[in-house]
Length: 235
Ligand code: NAP
Image 1: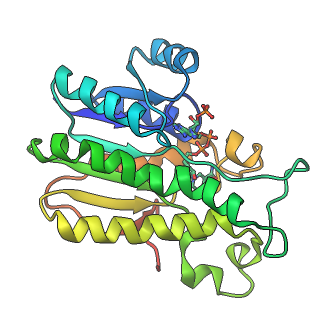
Image 2: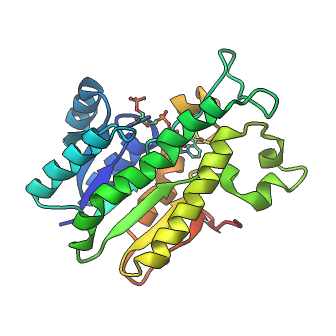
């Protein structure tokens, strides 16, 4: 039996990933920072619910303690993420971004990933086939962001792509340090969720594809990589 925790799984890509992994036989913890939203989502999927705010040390430590007492963890999906938006839905470009905005985005997208991974490492190390999937973005790709004429090149924001580039680096460094684990970064593609005010062009079913695949990667599968549904992405 594979036990899986998905942070930020009360909606969006995390919720769809939970649905698919439950169908594939995983025991899934829906991670949610809000008890009511989490309970509703878990009831809908007949999943377990765990309260976890990835920006809060005490919340993350309590979640790890509960899941450890329940029997441990095999797969961690660091999915919780934020993208700062203006009231009109636009993103903050280089002329507007502040250190505080950067800090807020990094608190969830980067420090959250490290906080949760650090707390769950002892549990994952006791698993026979530990897996970590980190939600990156195509906007994390230095190659794409600097390739004129692509949609990625045109994206003007700073905090979000910088945070996801940091997620890629964290992924690589953890993968090298823990060769017994499969640790990969994934780009779901531009998906209609609350994160982008539903402007994404893919469905959550399409977006969850690579997350679900990398959550099920076997011990001889890739590690330290950066993938979308079509394959490896350039860093
Ligand atoms: P979403 O629908 O807005 O879902 C984000 C989830 O993260 C929500 O459950 C949210 O909880 C949770 N969350 C935010 N801050 C949290 C915190 N401090 N602690 C715990 N949970 C927190 O967005 P999504 O598109 O599914 O995003 C999922 C992941 O995919 C993110 O990492 C995002 O960057 C990545 N991604 C998305 C796209 C896309 O096009 N949608 C593309 C590339 C990568 P609340 O409901 O409580 O706010």
